[in-house]
Image (cartoon, rainbow, N blue to C red; front, top):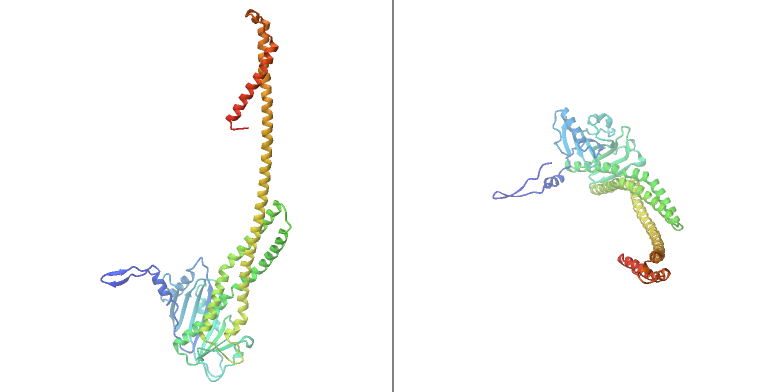
Length: 445
């Protein structure tokens, strides 16, 4: 991509350009209409391309041109036009597909001859020599012919059951097709020129080719919708069953199990929605382009035949509505799954909080019992220690009395009396010590 040039404003000064200025300016002129001289034959194909290898199509065209000694596309180019012996090859690269248009000279049809001769298969040899960048989706054989007073026997070229015809560009041309592949695999489109002029003819040819190209690209969303339909129906049924079970489920284990199942369903639905997000969005965009191109050519009905707009509205619109319906169902079920999961999550949280409250109450009761036991043990400890202290006093007094020390000192010591006096003193002393210890640990009565 060329860098944006600064904008000079005189006196040697310049305004710095945005780095994407050149790119956005060039985009408006990337795919201009090319003049078309009637009669003319166009073979137009479109291949889906791999986003992981965006340069594959350009490299294939570059190799094709190099083998024939003509200039190939510039590095990074997304379109190229080259003349080869009176024919013209046009290549265009788009977001997910590349188109190749083989523009060939033709001759005026002699009376009684049918268009599309020779067959597209006989003329498509140069296109098959270009390395294919992906699977083929679009193949169109468009024949631009001069209109005559004689009407072609179109039933010999197209299927009358699906033939769509209309006058376009204020009656300056007629377009006709049955939207069905011929034996060569190409969809035939006949454009009858009634005085378009080269510029108008080129514009009409390009718009008609774009209608067929974007029609098929838009319909790529239908197989995706059909693939997702059974899965969405199954998820809907499981969601309905689970919401019914939610009304009667009890217990944390049951609700947690249902929440896990809802999460699995939501993950499955989101995986499908994410995979189809681009396809459905692209189908809407392509369908809008088809409608815009049909509006641009300004169709006028031909008695006895549907216009292209009428035919596509009848055949294509249901497919687009199917895609939109599947996309809407995905969004609707996703919202319902989210609400159901929120309800279950709330119920699980309430039950967990209830369990936590019961657990805390149990712990409080256990702590209260432990405190009562502790105080009981402390009471027993006071009695036991007091008993040992009194015993020590008794043994001491008895030893003094039996040794005669009390008589030597001039008094008679009664061990029983001394022990009796020591008991309350010991109890008060030990109780006071225990009380101080409890206060030191912050255990206030």
